[in-house]
Image (cartoon, rainbow, N blue to C red; front, side, top):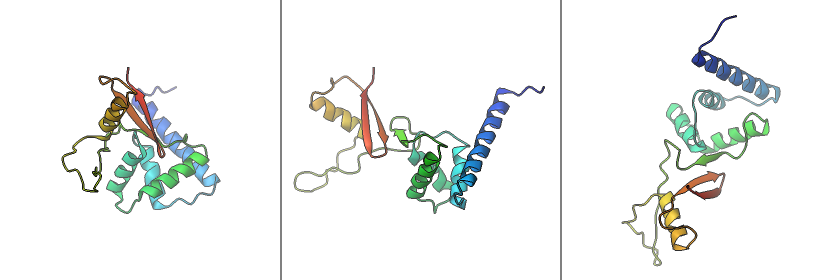
Length: 154
């Protein structure tokens, strides 16, 4: 019996999982476009902290790839039981996503230009002002679909 190194064994498991995924898609008669095959290749070649990170990687390979294509295909994979649901992502862990505040407008509608703060810090400060957390506490921010989840770090 041949022995495999840990990396060879992991590579075999990834190839086997990819093969099973394609088999399930074929059984379900899911049309496999070029973009969907590119997403399958990406999903089984790396680890992604969020859907947008996967999307950015896909866009590097195929500039025509849209974010809705990624979400729709992930929904197909979820409905077939190939991946687990939620499409959540960790704002703190995402390597390619820069979650920053898009704009702040004052009561007259004028844009506040000197507001250079990231989104998790803005949320943390709001929780401090509302008295929901202490000023020295840090938070983790995650999103699942269109819901924001905040937890206080220990």
